[in-house]
Image 1 (tube, rainbow, N blue to C red):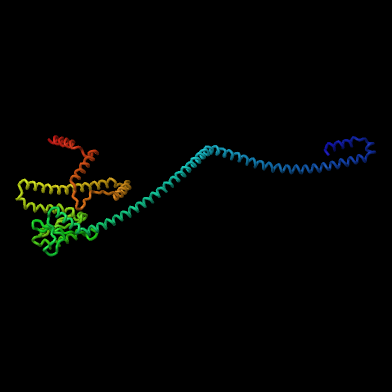
Image 2 (tube, one colour):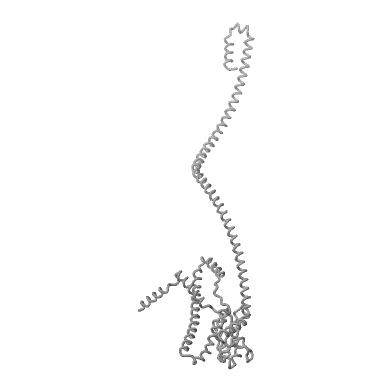
Length: 409
């Protein structure tokens, strides 16, 4: 019941007349009891409300404290949000840049993967090339060793057959030049080959190395020079004796090809020099009959002999000059590619040099050189040189020579 209802009931009791109070006192008492009950109930409600209010007040205080704490936290969060917003504002361009960098990184990774694939392919090709090169080099090395072995074997066979070859060559020359070859030797210990010119015996002894090592060959030749004294002691033996050695040993002996003893002289020659040597010795026999020749024939003979000697000496001189120039050019070429940066070219050039072969004309035994054929070949070579401007025309040479003579005058 509300307070106003209680107030109305009290007013109603108070406003009753005295007669009503006397006759209806029970009713009034009942109403007063109701009012008292209501008042007690209201008092209890008020007390409950007061307790509830106190509880609410305490709760409000706590809520207020919590609100202040939350407000402080909220303010802190607002500050943090502002800071984060500032950071976001700063990081936004960086995020865009990061996206660009990520895209570039992905592109670079793709390029790297492509390059790695290409590199792997090239490395595989390089490895295959190296394997092929190694196989070719191994084949080349084995072929080179095989050819070297064959060359050594052929050289050994050549040296083993050297005495027979020299004997056959001397007999052939004797046949061509009408020189006497002595089969029957009336002295002890017959030499390998003996010819006779002007009633003098001329000794040609063939000597060859015993193995492929040529270092000891000069010492061996010196000992053989001393052994030739047994032939030189005979009065009818010419005091100029000849040792015929293989062609490839001349380089080892080139420092000394003539040995002089007290009463004889020994000359070291190659099989290629046999014909010119025997031809020169044959001229002695021709000079003995010089008195029977006419003055014109004697002059022609002297001119031909002198020309031949000059030709031979000139060829030797030219070969020496060309060899010297060739060695100088080799030294210059090696100096040009001696830099470390050109080492690959140098190694490649040396490897190619080993595979390069220069084949010269081969002279067969028993076959004379065709002068007409060589003249035609010389004209062909001269024509090719003129076409390639290696040499000038004869008229140009003459005009240049005349210009030089005019300059000199």
